[in-house]
Image (cartoon, rainbow, N blue to C red; front, side, top):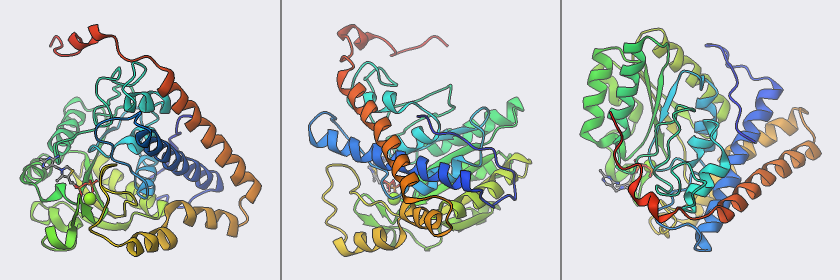
Length: 335
Ligand SMILES: Cc1ncc(C[n+]2csc(CCOP(=O)(O)OP(=O)(O)O)c2C)c(N)n1
Ligand SMILES: [Mg+2]
């Protein structure tokens, strides 16, 4: 099951039941995929760094619902598995890349932080904090230069937003009115450093003010709020009005990466977010309370999602390791 993109019109923040169900499925797929990745990591089947997106699912699912995967581009950091699934990339190819197998998107040679799909207009997966911001600005430049009508969604973290290259990008994007939406996923921490300790000024959505870039702060745990904001920002960028900043207030439940015991925050803090703000539970309740679906229907969705993830995990374990001759391929390409 690949995630489906729904066509939505600017200004249309209302959600039909079928949209809500699709959001539920899409978020659940990311959640279960990441849980499985965590398990495979624990079993020693995934090596290297592995940054899970659990807790933040509403951000990417709501954002992606406002764009078209035929013409719009997406770029993000190393916390990228959810973004790839939301771009419609194959869960089997993503999981097999995590296990370093030849069936992976980078033939098993890249791993978690190095996957791309030109077909789905997903341009990585970047391990250098903030590196995707000038690159995403360049993608937006390409959209404008080639007049293809596309916009770029450029995701970055609360830690990345303190980097100099971000502001050089903001300047150029505003000056040239580039069609880019900078989505700041403020999950409160950059590794073990909280935003309180690292960011001057709590409101990251205002960081573009000096460059005349409008910004908004959104509850990133509410997929419908994300979608509504995304539609507005995309309409702004697509109409030629230039860049837009969306600060998504969100939270990651797991440590920074699989090797982080997360001692810089309390268990109670995490539990409170899970119990009171979980994006999937909130939508589940909305669906059930509104009588849109029954418990049985949701169970069926859960079963379908689990089956997709199990199939991906099986594929990722059975796919062969890359042939040693692959050491010498994909290093340089002809211009
Ligand atoms: C240029 C650079 N500096 C430092 C690091 C080490 N590092 C990796 S992730 C990270 C924290 C980034 O946090 P944030 O931007 O909030 O993203 P999140 O991990 O929360 O998604 C740091 C400092 C790096 N990869 N690149
Ligand atoms: Mg962060």
